[in-house]
Amino acid sequence: MYHYADAIEALAGEFPDDIVLSHDGVQRTWRDFEARAARLGQALADAGLAPGSKVGLLLYNCPEYYEAFLAALKMRMVPFNINYRYVGSELRYLLDNADCEALVYHRSLSGVVAEILPYSPQVKLAVEVDDGGDGWEGARSYEALLAASAPAPRIARQADDYHLMYTGGTTGMPKGVICEVVPWSTGLTAIFAKNVLGVDPPPMELPQLMALVQGLRAKGVVPVSSSYSSTPSA
Image (cartoon, rainbow, N blue to C red):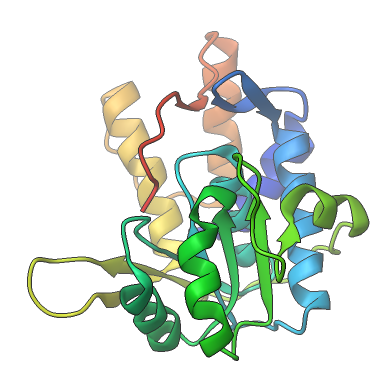
C-alpha cells in the first residue's frame, strides 16, 4: 500500500523524462508534473493553508487539474472536485460545506467565482488557469504563481490522508465522500493491472509498483494520461 504523492515522486525520480500527461498539444514529463505540483503546493502553504486544508478544483480536463490535485496531496491537504455547471448559490454552498481555503479554477469561469468569493471569507487563495477572458481581479495567475514559488520540500504523509469526491445527484445538495488516499492509490494500480495486463495483483507496496512500471517500459508500454476534449473533470 502506498500514498499517491509518494508514488508520483518516486516515478518522477526514476523516469523523469517519460511523458505522463498529454492534453491538446501540451505535454508534461514526470519531472515537470511533480515539480509544478511542488511549486503549487508551496504556494498553498505560503497562503496559510496547512495539512487538512481543503482545495477546490473548479476546472475542465487539463494538466493543471492533475497538478493541483497532486499539489494538495503532496502537502497533506484535501483536494475536491467542483462541477463547472454550478451557479453562484450552488458554488457558495459547496465552498462553505467543504470549508474550502483555496480555489483553483479556469478563467472562463471567473464570472461565477467573482459573484461568490466576496461572501466566502474562508477562501485564502484564488488561482486562475488561463483559458481566455479577463478574469477576476482578486485572483492570482496560475503560471505566475508557480514561477514565483520554490518547490515545496518533500514530507512524510500519513495513512489516513484523504481527498473528497463531491457527488451531484438529482435530489438534495451535493455531498462529500471521503476517500482515503492510500487504498485509493493502490486500487488505481489494481484497476490498471486488470484492464491493461489482465491480472488481479495483490495490494502492492511502492517497490512492487516501481517494478511493475519497469517491466511495462521494457515491453514498450508507457502509460500516458491523455485528454483532448473540454469535458470537465468534475
